[in-house]
Image 1 (cartoon, rainbow, N blue to C red):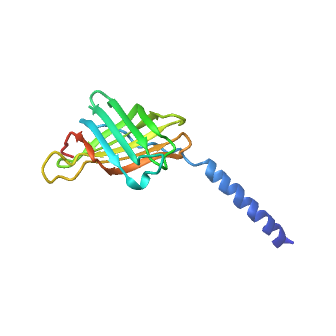
Image 2: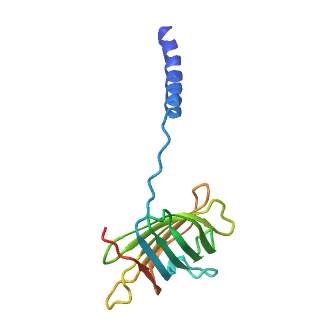
Image 3: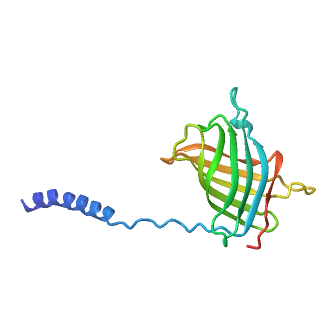
Length: 178
């Protein structure tokens, strides 16, 4: 009898104990998003042949003019991504509406990391992350600039993404010593 009561009570205690533990978890503190003194400008056109079909070119284009100075407090500028890829839910123009972070690193091939909120047709809760690498394409024998982005909707579903070399245009990221 004692074993059967224990067999019934033990799972109940485990379930309630687990639920109590889940309710006691502390909220996560988001990472600190601080910009460094930087500037990013230019445009970059990327073609990804595997992302084309009869209705889509398999391309995206980034246009950017951003700056950030921690003394001013917040990043500022404009950013847009024009998407025409076969597997993207968001097609057409995606425009940044709020910049939350603009940070760059690197001296010889400076790279900028940018994220924030955006606006896109039929996308509610639009958020984006963007990486731009300035490989000094205008110099002889230099690698092309690189652009990568991810766009999510308000429930965390991917609605657009891309990563590739710039085939037309030039991205300029201010070099930093860090």
